Image 1: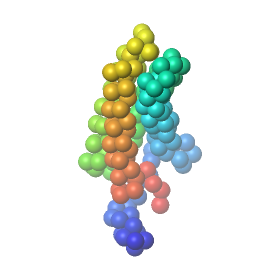
Image 2: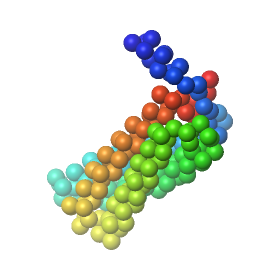
Image 3: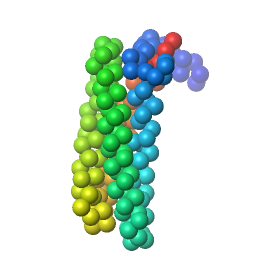
Image 4: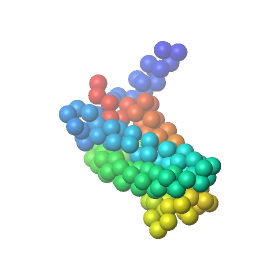
Length: 158
């Protein structure tokens, strides 16, 4: 198994990052926040549906808003990587990741905007539906991002 993993990594040479803090790529550091916020929104929507406690609806509003906002910041760092490094632009997985992330942010912002007037009224059916769609898009974008790092070694220093 270890040999198969080594062969997979040697498939391409590592491509470093241009958008860094020190030598650490900023995009992978930032994506953890919107992932956590947007996935937690599904749980807080479910908690609201079970308990009917307005706290959970307000929590979802804040989680979706923070996830969308932090996702936008992470997206700017990711887009800077995509546009500044030819090796990344040449990978179809990079473009798939980009498209999935743009769709994800679009759905997250829509989810947030529909919750702003009345967080509790927006949870069912549209809020929780959009939260679940967002969670699915997080998984797709994450899979493609992981493919870039682990298979194509993008953003990795030798």
